[in-house]
Length: 295
Image 1: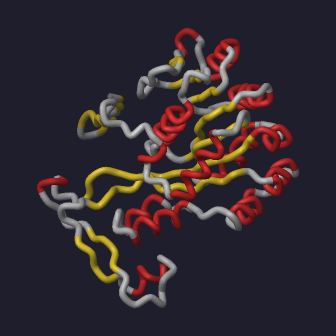
Image 2: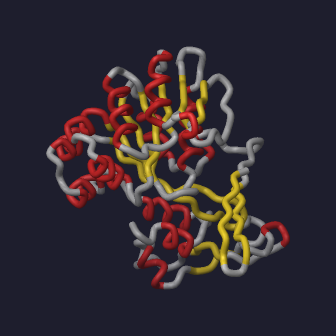
Image 3: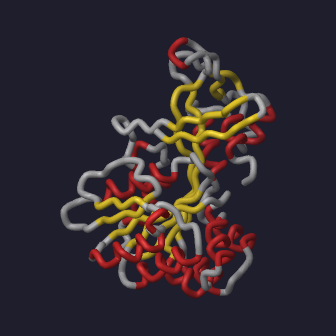
């Protein structure tokens, strides 16, 4: 459990973040990825070295995705080490270290220390500064697979953020192998949801304006979902594998808009992935539009 408190005019405001360590879906196949997205992720984490970034706002499931990736890689042949703040789930067979600023154990220092432990795969909970970026790059260049997270609105935005931190474009182009961006949407309660014919606005947004009979889910509310109409959450994703063209664009320090335009030629964005779940009745159009408002 993680607790955050802040004083307000009407009294103390408290937010609890509950982590269910017994039922956590620490498996990439249980996170709601499409077959195409899952294959892309599995291809990226099977690479022998490079940096794979997972990006999104706070509470979007980034750490769970990284844990799922680590569990997929966790076997007796690999030495996997992590630096986290905090350790949210304990993984058998993986060496996990928690940062502690009081004793100077930062992400960068922790990463520097575990690189002396002969790891094959390294997970850094979050890249927050240039020092950590440079250590991750060095780890990648010396033959390690590095997994980490950033706070950006899009996958390509992660590359721009690293450049803004001061990372050299030629080093980023030779080390970043892929970026996954994600959001969480609420799942319609299976006990009370109803399927209704989509109106013209919804069909236009979903890219099926000329279709006639298309049903999409609507929340109702019942005792099983606390009268919210939703029960649980699932992820929507975009995964970009860095190809030679994008690698050259990063090296040339091209604009985020140009890189985004190229990426869209072979990768769908998160909103498109969300629309897929609207059409399957898993979530609502309003949910997808809410979490992808800035995309």
